[in-house]
Length: 315
Length: 200
Image 1 (spheres, helix red, strand yellow):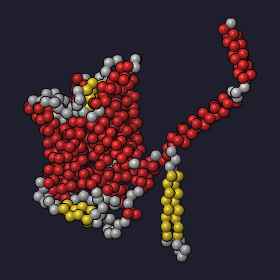
Image 2 (tube, rainbow over the protein chains, first blue to last red; image 1 turned 90 degrees about the horizontal axis):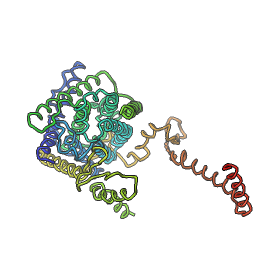
Image 3 (cartoon, rainbow over the protein chains, first blue to last red; image 1 turned 180 degrees about the vertical axis):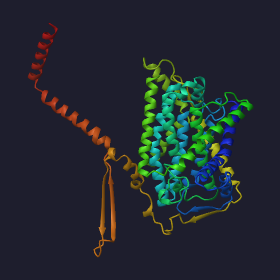
Image 4 (cartoon, each protein chain N blue to C red; image 1 turned 90 degrees about the vertical axis):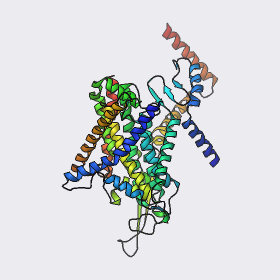
């Protein structure tokens, strides 16, 4: 674990935190423009966070320690994943610390704590959100694991740096059937886990239809700021993971500052393109009924399963 | 009882943080049994775990440290925010319903209900909904009872049929060998004849 490697990891965290709210603002702007509205400025999520950090914290009488701990765990797990995932360089210091499975379970840790926090206040809405989130997670998680398995079979490693390097070494694997199938499966899961349409409506404010918003109803002030930032971070981390696992070109294979600068530009372009695609598609689709969501996730599981099967037969 | 739970979960947490301490004993155990391991399956330097078959590494200790560092950093940012005031004891959000009791909380049944509905075909839950009406008018509901019972799918589809097969097998065996020495001698005689016929 070298000093420059740790510097790269910290740089990734700082970059992700700086970019995440802007990216969400951009997605809202694209959506607003396509719907014929002007929409809030792109920097609005940052302003919201700043405003929330200055607000008073209100804590319900029924809550316990889980309620206070959950925002910290959620933001810490998202930030740690941002440090591990090779956004800038394949020579990240934390590459041997956690492989792709560890990354998935770190993200799951955040989801579980958010659900616990939703239950902790003892309100009907928090319980409803937690129950729905866990239902979706329980169906999405097998897909993630199977899709990752397909990726690790084709590159012979579950370490993110190794997977990215192997795709860089053999560019044809990026267009192989197992890679495309795994990409499709992970894309569906990304949409489910980050609470985008058609699984959850990020702009929903009606209690009966919410999933993510229902769990954070009780939060206010700085805690809410942390949760919002964590949600933005998770979106960027998922999109960055998708982008760099399947289209790794542009990533630095060294830790030289100039290469890192180029890699930052490349990954920003990739994430922005993915986010813009999601924002545009969201304009044209409506939220699925809750009990139709499992069908979507089951389809993604089938894709992931096919990816594993294909990678064994084509290996 | 709680001491047992705490002790077991303590062991789980310790192993989760430092699985490297078990790597060497497990390795010795696998090398004793011939034909299982060709070389060490796991290499470790105390902090990192490295699989030798494929390129995969993990360091639970550093992951936990990283998580703790990030949490402390987040806490520091929140503490530095301009307002330190925290108002405790406010009522929870009830969508306009101000009085909330423990009866409105999500129970285990209601928490698992969506998942149970998704896996309806596998779990086959038995659901009973009893609605009592007021005697004056059928339009007014007096009480609703909701019961949900899920039979263990593995027990009913796998273990019980397997046990039944084993019991039938045992019953058959008991009929064949009932403790009579004459019967056993007859069996050996017949077996001998069959072996002689086959090997002729």
